[in-house]
Image 1 (tube, rainbow, N blue to C red):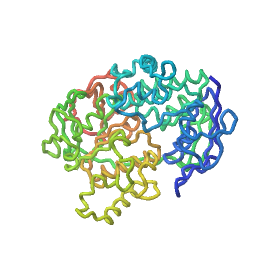
Image 2 (spheres, helix red, strand yellow):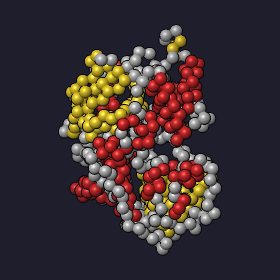
Image 3 (cartoon, rainbow, N blue to C red):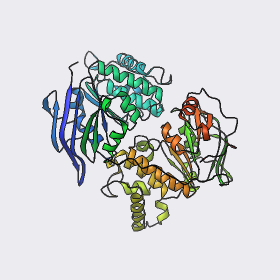
Image 4 (spheres, one colour):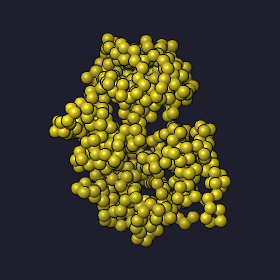
Length: 512
C-alpha cells in the first residue's frame, strides 16, 4: 500500500447564505491519527465530506500525495483509497450484511459474475475483527434491519474497511458502541497506523481523543483555529479553542426535595423479549438515569413505555394503570420520547424544519391550520433552544447534528410533556449543545416534568441524575443513589459484577 499524505488548505463551502466552511485546514499523514474537533456546526462534517468527495468545495485546495487533487464523487475518492464512516449510517436495511459491505465492489468470478462464496468468506473475515464483542446473530447473511444500533455501526465500519483504504475518516464512529467494542476498534486503529494508513477521528468524547489521537485540529465557526500535538495539550485547552475561549457553563440547579412529590410513573415487572422484569418509580421533577453498557435493554424499556414495543407487566401513569400499544396513545397522555437514532426515528429528513417541529402538533391548530400561529410557536421554541438555522423553511437535513437533535426535542416540548423519555439524547452532540440541553432539563424539572434519561455517557449520568438504575442483560443490576453515585459503582454494575441494593426501586428515595 502506497503511503498517503493529504492536506486541505483554506477550503470554503457555502449553502445559500449559510457559510459551512470559511477557512478549513487539515493535514494528515500515513501512520497518523488526527482528531478533527469542533462544536456542532463548526464545519467538521463538511470538511470530511469534501475530503471524501461527497461535497464539492467552493474554494481552497486539496493536495493528495503533494499533488493538487479534486474528488468529484465518493467513488473517485474510494479509488484513491479515501473513505469514511459517517455519523448517520448509509446501510440499506433490507439488504444483508454481506450485500451492504460489498455494494458496488462485489467479488467477481472471472471478472463478470458475482462470487457469493468468496463474498461470504470475506465478510466473515471482516466480522471476525470484532469477534467476542457482538452477538452470534451478526452473520454475513442477516438483514441489516434485524441488527442493533451498535451492530449496524460495526457493519458501517467494516464497509469502509472493505476497500482497504489508505485514509479513513471515523465520524462519531464510537457513538453507538459499548466500551468493549470501542476497545476493539482502537486496537484496529493502532494496527492501521502500523500498516501506514492515515486516520481522521471525529469524536465528542475527550477521553477517546486523548487515548487514540496523535494530533488535534480544531474548527470553530467554519474556520480552523488551531492544531495541537495531543501529548502537549490538555482537555481544557482543546475545549477553549472549540468554544472561543470560554469554559462550558456549570449547570447549577436549586436543590429540590422529592420526598413528597407526586408519583408520575410506576412500573412493576415489565417484560419484553429483551427485558427481564423491570420495576421502578419516578416522581414529578425527578431525573432518573438509566445506565449500563449499550444494548442491555435500555432502549427497549423506553420504547415499551412509549407504546412502540409490546410488553407484559404493569405500568401506572399518574395513578392510572395504562398499557400503550401505539405511540399515539402515549402522546395523548403527555408522554414523549426523544429517540436514540434521530435520522431514522426522530426526523423526516426530506421535510422542512417547520414541518418537523410541528409534526405531532398540527391537529392542535385547527382543521384549517392556523399557519401564522403555528409558525410563531415554532419560531419561539426554536429560539428557546437556540437552533442555528437559515430559516424554518430550510430542510432539516441542512442542520448540524446538534441542531437537528434540538429539532427532535423542540417538537415534543411544544406539547408540554409530563413524562419525558430520553434515549441517549447527547450522542454525537458537542459540548456547547450538551450544556444547553442540561439547562433545559433543569428548567423542565423545575416545572415538574418527570424525566427518564438513558445515556451511554457515564459522567453525564453521574453529574445529572438523582438516581441511576444500571441495566445488565435486560435486568436492573443495581440502583445507585447518594454515596453510591460513583464511577466505580456504575462501571461495576454495568459489567454485572455488583449486587443490586436491598432497597427496591419502589422504595428507594431520590437524592438531590
